[in-house]
Image (tube, rainbow, N blue to C red):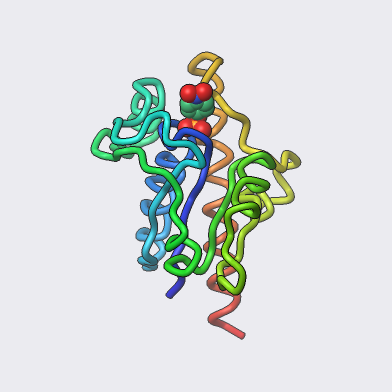
Length: 156
Ligand code: 4NP
């Protein structure tokens, strides 16, 4: 089974929410890959998720209050088979840090769900609760598409 790392800027809004939504959906689908989340910056290292992210996740049905922020490490590029960046800036930072020869597949998360029509999960940090709810909607769609992809690949 795959291992997946979700990456955003601060690791307190989008990526801890992504981990929780994917864990929930994948488990419902009978799948249990190793997952984690990290940030490209360490500004919030050791902190719990943003209270707005905790609230939006809780309304959606998952508890992310126990998550703690950490920064992406060099080891992540060998520990995880897939690394999903929330936006292009995260993706560029990951490419800059990826060691030569590391095998991880590093891409934008929303590449999983081109039908959604938006290829970046927007940073909700400077907005209101609506932005956090939108993040959850995008993550849910992306998780559904990954499950479809994994099911299709085990069938073929
Ligand atoms: P995240 O959101 O990358 O989804 O965790 C942010 C968190 C913190 C900041 C920006 C975005 N910040 O500027 O501190």
